[in-house]
Image (cartoon, rainbow, N blue to C red; front, side, top):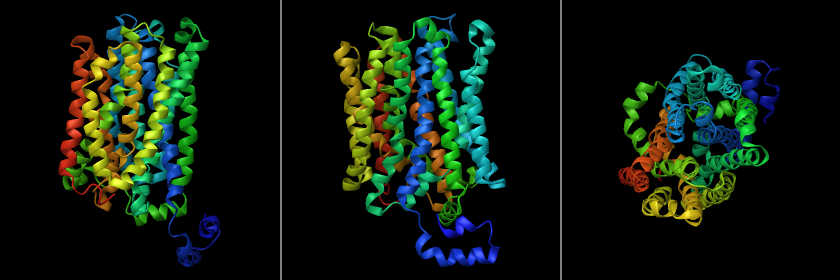
Length: 445
């Protein structure tokens, strides 16, 4: 940290200005690696919370909140509530950016912290249907919406700052760093549930054990958001964000000016987002409903797959810097399209087929998702990047992943696994179509 920052509170304004000007040669730029730390902290905590809720939607919520329904219908209801956060997230982004424009970035993040913590802790302490009846379901839905609004409000601009600050020939490498949060978050969340399922009886797990991961998610979110708050409130980061014009703009004006970029950015990574839930949440629900395979053993296979995804995310940075992000995303979308054709055979192929599906699916996910953030933030004018990147990410999650578990399970249960393959194929086609319209994707990050 610069001396200006360290002593800014004790120096008069004109001396602080002079000291800042004198130090510009050494401190005007923060290393991209330092920015990446904030990005990784924020994304890892977000994904952990995300997967805790997703796994609970399969293993817990059908039994404790929808015991009056058959397991399939209960899971579909749980997935419906799961989607509420993705619907609410853009509204949270717009509302909290208005707070930032009116007050400050620090206040916005603090309020997001309080809302996210209250929502997650609320789920941990929520009475079940047996104790509260239908009101328990209503409260679960409200708390899930609260999580979505808070996640929209927690956008700090660091991913965009990282994209703008990364060396031109290493943008693929720095773009993938934040994406590592997805496999890391899944491994930790799945590991917690694996341990609880292995150590507790079914009765104890459904009575109180499932609440423990939400306690952990609450603690991690508090620590992570305070770390990000401390980071973005420093003089160095505030100056760098201002220099890059990373400030919120009116959402309606941004959409009117940059609507094409919002749409293309959301669709360019659609294959990755569609695959995201088809190798994490959906197969877990399908195994729970239609297979006698041990759930804890299947979670262990998924954790191995997530480790492959992490390796794929890292590799994607090297590949994108060598061949270009657009080429990388296009090639992976084509491979995902091919993979969609074998989804029915593998998922209906017993333990071996399901294991192959998980491992290959996670590997493809890592390679493609590693560069998805580049597609989200590409091509915006600097004055619109802060708001545009946030809303484009929200839209990509909503269209590509928000309803994926619900749609995939509903299609497979009523029409067969072949329709899950068609669903994934549609995402790959959407990505290829968007990339064909976006020739400038690898020119500007």
